[in-house]
Each structure stands twice: as C-alpha cells, then as structure tokens.
Length: 384
Length: 245
Image 1 (tube, rainbow over the protein chains, first blue to last red):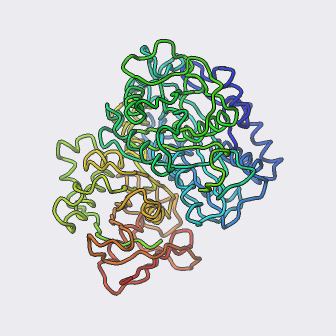
Image 2 (image 1 turned 45 degrees about the vertical axis):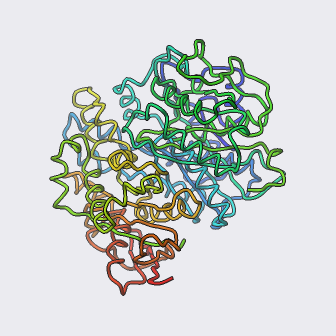
Image 3 (image 1 turned 90 degrees about the vertical axis):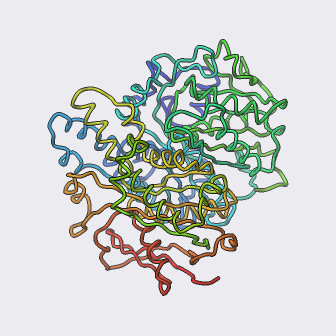
C-alpha cells in the first residue's frame, strides 16, 4: 500500500495520525505542504523515475503512492500482464484551471483552453513514467471512483485478465471543488463531526493512495478484497436518497459478492462525510441492513477530511491498518450522536477482533460502492 | 470479453435542442441531452418500457473524454468574472454528472461507472460494461460514449490534437447482455477490443468517445465483423464482432 497525504508519504504516518487522533484538516481543508511537493520530486527521481521535473502535482502524488505500493508488494515493476486502475474526479485540472478563471475577465477562453487536456489523458504520463503498456483505466465516478478501482481490479484478478493490479486514486484540491462545495453550503470551516447531531458539513482534502492487488492467497497479503457491490440512487444530482436505498443495495451486493452474511461484518467503515444528508441516509441504510447484528460504525473523515475520488482508496488503506492492528478507530468529533441514526458508534477507539469490515463510498450523482475487506486469517483456505 | 449486443442507439442531433428546451432539461448540459437522445434511439429498438422494467438489472457505463467541460468552464469563468460560484453549474461540472442525471431521469439503480481515457474512452466504456456483466454485477449493461463541444472554442481544442484532426461532437449507445442472453435476440456479439499500431488516419470528423457510436452503426451493417478505428496517436483500435455464437 502507498499513500501521500498531509500526514506524510506512506501509510504508516497516516495510520499513526488516525490512531492518535491528530487532525489533518485546517479551516475546512487538508492541503499538502508546499515542501512535500519538492520532496516528492526528489524521492521519485531517486527511485529512478525520469522527467520528474515535468510531472504535474497530480501525477507526482499518484506515482509516489503507486511506487510505495509496488515496493511493499516486492518491488517488481508492472508488466504488460498487469493492470492499472486510477480513480479521480478532476485529475490534472490544476494545469488549466487558473487560465480559465482568468478568462472570465480577459475573455480569452480559447487561449485558456489551449492548455486543457481531457481528464483521461493523465493516464499517458503515468503509464509512461511506469514504463507500463498493460491494461489501464481511469474511473471518474465522483467520490466512488477509487472504491470502484478496487472492485474492478478484484474482478480482473479473479477472472485472470491480469496477474497483478495497481488500484487507487488521487485528488488535488482545485478552485472548482473548493468553491463548488462551498457554494453548495456543504463545506464547513470546522473539522467535520460525522454522525453528530450538530454536524455542519465536510472538509476537503488532497492526497493519493494506491494498493497492489494480487490473485489468490499469499503469505504476504496484508488483507483481502472479499467482495464488492455498486448501485445508483437514481434520486438527485448531489443529495443522497433520504432512506439510503442505494447505499443499502451497494452494501447488500458487496456482502453477496463476498459470500458473507451481515453478522460476519465487525465494523462498517462509513463514508461518513459529516454532511447532514449523507450521514442520515447512510446511517439508515446501515441500520436497515445490519438490523440486530449491529457492527461498530465509524468514520475517520473528522480527522483527515474528504479525499473525494481518492477517499475510498485512502480509507481502505486506513481500514487495512485497523484490520491488522485489530483497532476500530472512533469517529473523531462525534459527541452527541444524531438520535435519528441508530447505529453502534465507538466513542473511543476500540481494541476489538475484526475479521471483516465493510467500506462505503457514496458519490455525487448517487453512485455508490461498497467493499468487503478481510483479515488474512479469516480467508485461509477460501481463496477468492 | 464476449458480450451480446442487444440494441444500439445513435446520436440524433435534431432532438438535442428540443430536449434542452424542455423543463426537465432546464438545468442539464448539452452532454446530458446528447446522451438522452441516444438512449431514446436505443429504447425505440427495444420492446416498450423494456428499460424501466429492467432498471434494477442494468449496469450503466458512461464514457466521456472531455466530460462536462462546458459546465466547468461556465463555473470557472463566472468565478473569475464576478467571484460568484453557481451551485447548479457546479453540480453539472463533474464527468460523472451525465451519468448521475440520466440515472435519475431513467430510474436506473444498478452499478454505474464513468470512465475517461482520451482516444480510447469509448473502448474502455465497452470493456467495463463487459466486466460488469462477467462479474455478475448485472444482467445487462447500457454503455454510452459521448463528447460534446463547447461552441466557439473548437479552435482551441483543435490545437491540442494532431494536425488534420477535425473535431466534432457525438454519442452512441449499446445495450450489452451476457453471451447466452435469450430474453432479447442478440444483433451480434462483441468478442474483443484490441489495439495495434497503424499508419492510418482517423475517420473524420473525430471525437474521443466515438467507438460506441461506431460500434452501434457497424452492428446495423450485417457484413461487418471487424471494426477498425484509427486514432490520432497512430494506434488502431479493433473491435471484433461475431454474427453468430
């Protein structure tokens, strides 16, 4: 696994911040430090990547997280028999966004758009930097994007289309996303408080996380993707279906795909953005699916904010650390649980046995994805 | 992949402006109207109400290269000109906005994925549609490839493509089913999407997600078994069709 966040480079530093409840958000945002970009260029240069000086910020953080993941998986470079799936909502937008904003005053839109490149074109410099010519896809299903990369990657492996698959997502904060969420009145200047009765909105973050998936059972496995499910709300462009029907169906599909029952899930690692509508809808879906089995439910976005298209991958990485440490992180900021959401919140981080957890990602457009992640000891003898 | 092609739809330019004048499209983008018009064409080739009757068993995959650039530009230029951010424009600015809008309009509740891959956007949408069938996520997959143009900025876009490439807008849709699908008679089977080097020039005019529309049109020609799509980067995308299983 690999990650680049404000917490640093690597997944351990991110997990440490979560475990120690150290905030990564400030005034509504979690931006990388400027010196981190310099350090990333240096690191990637030392790792043998060429032309790092010309790589965009988006490519830098994505490649760094990918490189970390490949190193941890044994260091072998990707071959044409492997796969690559990248999730993002805005990709390289910083390369042309300022010019388009300026054209609002100058009127030179055509000139500004000359620097524009289509979203999926970002696969080219990344594949080039990795010297990779295999199966590559860019998924841009809003905030479900990187969870969908895990789902599709797992399918490619199960079906034998690839031998290994690098999956994950990256997101850079842009004026479009920050001002967009602000004008929707979803952005809070205070750290988010998911599931709290007084929750006031989300925080936005930039970062990347990637995971190297391999087929079958391995003694080196950190965890297993046991199942996945996807659904659509078919309800609204930005608001979730109030009863959580789409989220329920994605979780149900993920359980079915994993061959597990709801009572096998020890922890639901919620999307839990801290927005009033999301948490209520998701909470109702969890309550309905799990009924009396009542797994622990928590969100870590109160600490690190919302990585949008990368959030599923970043939080899967955190979740895998939790699984391996057998610690369920609490929902930071949750003081007075919303009485309309009847789920079991850990008010402190808990040392509890976790065999399987379920990770939700719910996106604009009503696009939902759920993943079931399992501890290696829970899948011995039942390779997927 | 071997997926049955059960129905096809192509972009009907004459319907787009009238759609955009309708109240339910008041806040929609050109891409959304283009895609809706294409799906309407596809639905006319299916039994009545087939789409709504199968909405829960259907995956929806949308491929778009430039996405909702029109809305993004409106949002950003408005921000630059007046400092005002417009929420309804923002919600239409993501690449996923068309998929979200159409899922809502058509009440499609199955798995939904938006992909973008420059010249190969249409091909990726088709293969992801095939993935969602083969992994059991859905019984059918509605695949739409779409790219609109922002009027007045063609020359700027043109400059980001190799010389000689004339850009256009367009959309296509195919309904895929499992290879052994029996409930609807397959028109053909999509066997493989592959890529090779070429010296051929792209068909003109070009848009990045054109593979879905080209496939939709090719399926209607019974003799076509191999569809070759030269790309601006001197690769050849090959879609292999079977006319019988």
